[in-house]
Image 1: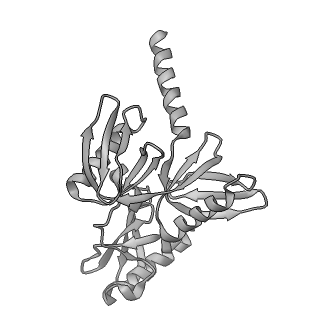
Image 2: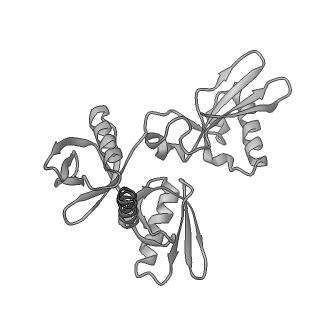
Image 3: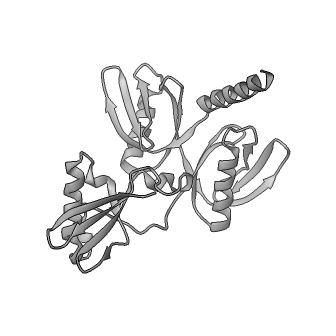
Length: 254
C-alpha cells in the first residue's frame, strides 16, 4: 500500500509541475469568439484563452504569429484546458553543458548572455538534456523558453533544418514529371477532409507504372526529435498509378 501511495504521489507531483511549466507548442489555428479564443496546436492539444485575461491581446498576438511563422511559443495550459500564459520563445546553438550541482545543470548559449539552468526535478529532465546534448554535438539550432530571473529552462525543441521538402500544393516547384501525381495527391487529401497545404513532399521515387510520394505533415517538423516512425502521426506514402492517373495506395509510416 505504501509503495502504491508513493508512486501515486510522485505521479501527482509530476502532473502538478507540468501544469505550471511552459511547454513549446506551435499554433495551428486560432478561433476567436465573444468570450475569448480557442487555440489549436499541431500536437492536437487545444487551449482556451479568455478575454478577461489581463494579457489577452498580447498572448493572442503571439499565438497568431506562431500560426503565421510556424514557430513555437511557450504555453502554460492547466488541466482544464485554460491557457494561463503564452511566452515568446528564443532559439540559438548550445555552447556548453556543465554539471553545476546535484540539483542543476548549467547551459550556455552562443548568442545569449547569461547562464541558463536545467533543474533535475523537471519532469522532462532526461528528454530536455538529451536535446541539449544533441544541439551541442550536432551543431543544431534549438528553440528554448526560460523563466526569469534565474533563466531556468522549462522546455526546448530542436530545429530540424536538414529536411529538404517542397510544399505539396506548390506544383511549379516540383519536377514536371511529378506534378500530375502531386496534384492527384492534393485532391485525394482534400477528399478525405485534410488540407493539402499542410503537407510537404520529399524524395519522390518512380517505377515503370507508379510514383511514390512520401508526405510529411507540417506537425512533423516540430515533433521529429520527440517521436520515431511517424512524427505527428500524419506522415505517409501515397502511391500514384501513372496509367489510371489516380492514387491507388496509402501507407502511414510506422
